[in-house]
Image (cartoon, rainbow, N blue to C red; front, side, top):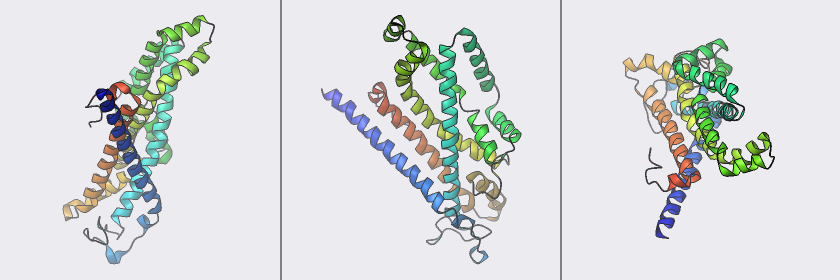
Length: 284
C-alpha cells in the first residue's frame, strides 16, 4: 500500500511538472505574439544599449528591444515546432502502423525508406529539402516535417508488431473483426501514449533544427524576427563587445528546448505506469 502511494505521488509530481512546462511554453508563445510589433520597431536613439532595467536584454545596432525580438523569435519557433512535429508524428503513425499491418512487401518498402532517411546526414537532408522547396516558411515546415518521422515510425512499427501477437487482438481476428476495426479499436488506444510522448519529444529537435538552418541561411527570410536570424546577425557584433546580442537569445532557446524535454519525460511518467515506478523516469 505504501509503495502504491509513492508511485501515485510520483505521477502527481510528473503531472504538476508537465503543467508548469506547458504553462511556461504557452506564456513564451503568447508573449512573442504580443511583442511582434515591438520587435520590429527601430529607434537609433537607444541603439547598442547594454542590459538595463528598461531593456533587460539590451538593444541592438538598430535600437530594437532584444527581449521583444527574442520572445517573437521563440514564439515563431514554437509555432513552427507545433506544426512540423504534428505533421511528422502523424506521418510516423501512419507509416509505422502501415508497415506492421499491411503485409511483408509494404513493410519492406517502408523499412527501406526509413533506413534511407536515417542513413543520410540529418542536417544535410534538412537543408536540401528546405532549399528545394524554396526556403522560407514553406521550406522549413516541409524540411523539418519530412526528416523527423523515421525514429518514431520505427518505434510504432515495433509496438504494433508486438500488439498483433497479443491474445485479445488474435481473439478479435478469429471472431471476424476486420483489420481496420482491429487497428482503430484495439491497437490505436495502446499506441496513443507512445504517439503523444514522441510528438512532444519531437518539439525540441524541430525547434533546434529550424533555428539551425535559419542560422545557416537556408530557413526563414532575414526580415523575420526568428531566433536563428537573431543569433546569425549577432555573430558580426560579438567582437565589438556586444555580448548580450547572442547570450540572452541563446539562453532562451536552450531554456525552451529544455522545457520541451522535461515536458516529454513528465508526460511519459504520467502515461506509463512502469516509468512512474522508476525514480529516474522524470530526470533529464
